[in-house]
Length: 106
Length: 121
Image (cartoon, rainbow over the protein chains, first blue to last red):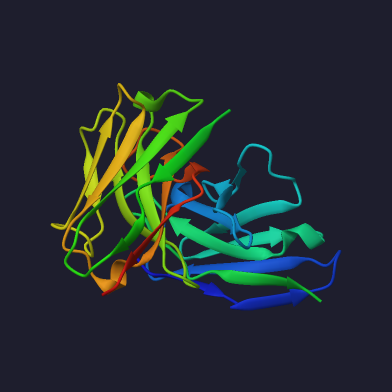
């Protein structure tokens, strides 16, 4: 399964809503889709697993949704500390990552 | 404190070998599946290999199958990656990560800081 993330780069102002897309080449069980945040120079951090469950300590401005081949990570109100690259991941029968979406602040 | 600490990276010539280790603390290691994920400079994340808590189930990416071997020592709370016949394309920062559940394929909730492997003559 290939995961394609779009857009490649998202440039928004603080307080705006960020919508990141992850499209799978074949259907993915909603139980097995995760999102990670990777800030510059840091290891990835798990944000969302099972499509919509927030990991421990993740603020509620981060939410996940989707099914089948189309999944979305939404940051409801962008904050400066959200500048990072975001990766989606499919797990369950294999482990595959998307290419990432870079989120910038205008 | 939950922590993973990788070691063993370095510069190696093509065709050479290297053994990475990952020391775990702060959680029940032998109940946890573990994974290695790598990231080439400026690139995305690339899964390498996973092992369940008992070591009974092991998986490899096709790109490393037959060259890399994952193992663990639950008495020492350590995870390993033996890398043989290294190629330039194996150059990356190698992360050790813990799975959410004791599954071969799962999301990873704890990550180390990584150890850099450079394959070059």
